[in-house]
Image (tube, rainbow, N blue to C red; front, side):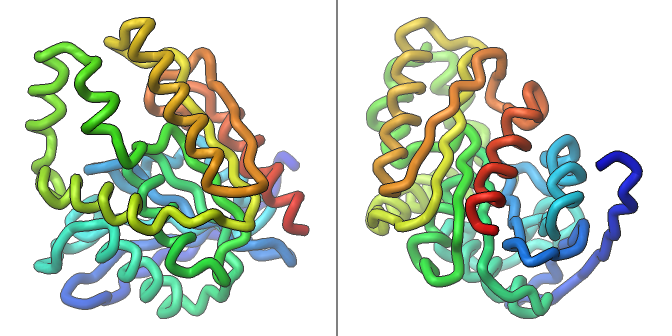
Length: 248
């Protein structure tokens, strides 16, 4: 499909008290709209190696959460619950009708999980890319070095603070209902600074996310650190394509 001219539309849409930046790549061809959400403190550029390829098949929505990238800051609480509500309103104002196929990286995976739980009738598939498990703090963080833990706790300065982030994990835990949609979980198998014990635990916790749906699949990206979409973009691209095919 080389040589396909990918159509791009950009938007600045007011949601609550902030203008959010979004863009749509590609054209819908009787296929679900793919919506991508980035990790904590990151924005739409995180999908530069993936979105153009998916846009050859269907329309892809990329957006910057409030306070990130080209989007204005919001005075609203920065929790997943609030972000999901904002994304829902954004999609409505962009006149993008469901069904949506959701793709979330890291903290973006938490948001996409919550969106699927709150609006199940709008979602036809979910791809989690090294998504943050809801019990990360209790089970995983203690296995890491003191230095790692200190650095982790100090990173929450870009959007929600530490308390809001932990509140988001609690929100998605409370909404942990079994979904009836195709789910693919992709785990990074070569995480920087991880001991063998921590890496094995991470992969185990990623596999536990398969219980979110009765129709789930697990992929281990053996040569990837946390940003699988950069290290092994084809792994993510092919996973998304597979879910698109299921929904044709």
